[in-house]
Image 1 (cartoon, rainbow, N blue to C red):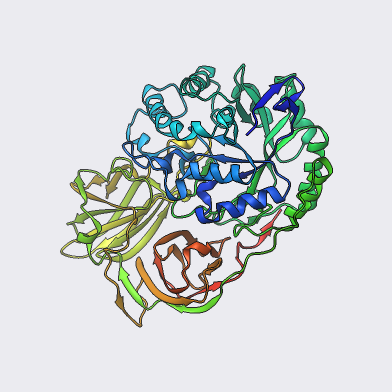
Image 2 (image 1 turned 45 degrees about the vertical axis):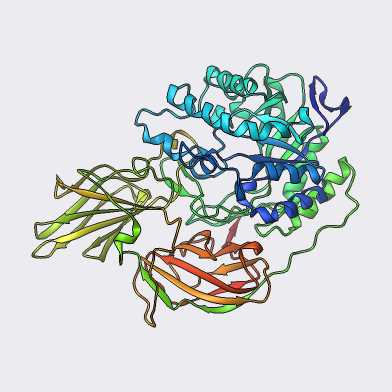
Length: 582
């Protein structure tokens, strides 16, 4: 592969003028058996480069573990990009934002109560060094200077929106170079953050979705010479639970793209293909009110969540062809889909039926946070015994993020983080009762000053103003559903309950799981966690990648946290991402 140079006049590739035409494609949001398809479609839109973040938290779920397999096989992704003739912009963080859980920062960092993320805090920098020591040996062979596809590596990510410590950025740059990164480094920031987020000697780039002249002028004010590049051209947007599906008209986005390319700038589409926040991996925003991101990361991108070209794909391909050679191949066609209605879920396993199968709780004088329990995703079940009968007021300092409260197994209320008022009153019967509080981590904050987002019951937890003597804290990461004992039933049981059913598929093709009549929870097909569903919307279906389905017998499991008016689910060809707004 060719080597990228940065000159006063712009980018050069092996001495020739070069414009980066790139698209965001996060390998960890796409089933690995579909990487080649998405990369091929990137080239057919006219792109010469793809961009990806690296999620530290997924690669290192614990400090002593580092994975590079399956959906995390970054070397294979880079090989596939090179085989397609695409260059790569690599964005390893350590912080990535990306509407991803915790901005990609591992939750175990927050087990240290003194931790200061994205700073020169010794504990944070020591962990970053360990991360780079494990990641970079796998990446270095794919740098352009060694014949690989990686043209450049990003330093941090939109740091100017968080801080202004040049010493921190310098330390990160030194850590990359010291470990063998010898391709150009770059930063990316929004126009108003360019001064704080940049570092002398490192290429600055700018992020925006509109206002091309204003954005490029802000970049030129900080960097009078050198390439003009928009590293995040926001051609769509993400969605939150309780909101609407955000869209941007293709013609409007195409006009902005044409203006950007006519100014001589390079571009990276954010996103080319958004993909999916599988499992529990979505992030959240909190600027005074907590807002969790939905499972779909469709992003109203040129390729939709299922990898099919949208009208925006064709509009962008047409604009790119005015400024670069148009691919000889036609626009890709929509992939085949599988549909099947009325899949019955007639087996159930109540979540609270067999505590011994769920693991061993930690007993102490207060509820422990997920981070103290060594847990990243999922739920925590807190339990205590109430001895005094009569009206009882439960008060929690902070709920992160959603707590279902049960008295002797019966639901008595729900506490939600965004409501700010975390109190609940109920009546304890004569003889006492067991209080259970099931807390869901709905996604750690991924942007801004609220990054230190510890999960569980936070702060003082009191009952009629007094602390309970003993609490048990049971982690429920739900990585393995085999301990649950399912039994056939004709009558739905109130949640939290796991529901299971089987179905036959004629072919393994993409589909969308529709959950009409169900309230809130997670869904698995053949053991693959598709992500969260919630009748609150806007998203009312979950994308099912073709490699997850099998030709023949398949299994679907729902964890329904509340209750349902249905015992069936449907697989349909089309998604339902809810009502739209521009």
